[in-house]
Length: 449
Image (cartoon, rainbow, N blue to C red; front, side, top):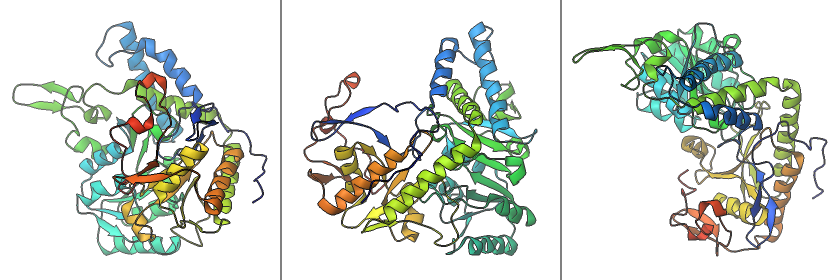
């Protein structure tokens, strides 16, 4: 095929690892192409710079009298304000720091005072906590309009406290109409939670304007991969629930037999918090806010269109969609299968022979993959602020070569994990572990992921 050409040849923002070179299976090296943003995005350069400045001042927060402790406390609490403003939260919304989106959603599940309704297309993080609570599941229909009607019918049939939905699918990148869903929920006396793990890295979100009651996200997908997440939303449910964790920092007063719990975010933030992870999210929000929103949107839309159309034009490649006709609104996430090859085999080939990193498996969305007829999994390519047209071109040409000529190396499947056979690529010297083939555990089986 003709190589893809476009003016979108520069990244929208500087990210860590942009100059990374990786070994190939034949002994050569190659610049790394990262198509795994949806799993964990690289840190923005501005984030690593901010953390480098903060690290010498790292100390305990809230209870230390030392200067470093005061600086860390100021950073931690300022981060609440910065993140809340970035997401246009209401003035009285609580901003609670968690480990990640999964932790944030489990926290809200702990606090929700009634029944929950969600779709069958959710990531496990927005599925399993509600499944354990006996939530009602609405099956997505072949159209978005039909899906909205099904949700409205379910909420009209019986009251619910919460409608829990994804903002953008982590499998197909398709975006749901959040404002319409919020209006439906509120019309029937329910609140709405948005799992924004995949939406926030790609779109600016206005919590108040969209009518979102609760929103959860992860720093590691928002260019701040340092182990923190956020739950933002109305404080009353959070203040009324028992603390998510019992421990220091979540209390006002403790006696031998009784405890008076704190209200506000502290109620659910027991223990020493992830000060650096929180600061990283705030730094990412600050950096993203300085980017021209329209320019970033055009950059992603162009690359996503190239990626989708380039893959769809290849013989034997099937691009996954939930809604075939009315889902033109997508973020930079594309899942696909290649006829004649298992997803894990495709991912191993791309890594070993082309220096391209993708994700394969079921993406913690088993019910959705089964619904789409790909219960054995797929390959996912996801783009971000550091992606370029040259990256998209390399991926499409690599898949075309696989379909035309097959792999140039042998690959074997062990315990569900595909890898080159033999595996010759060395690990970085700083790990002191030899080469990839020496690892005792090959990794998480692609079928289970």
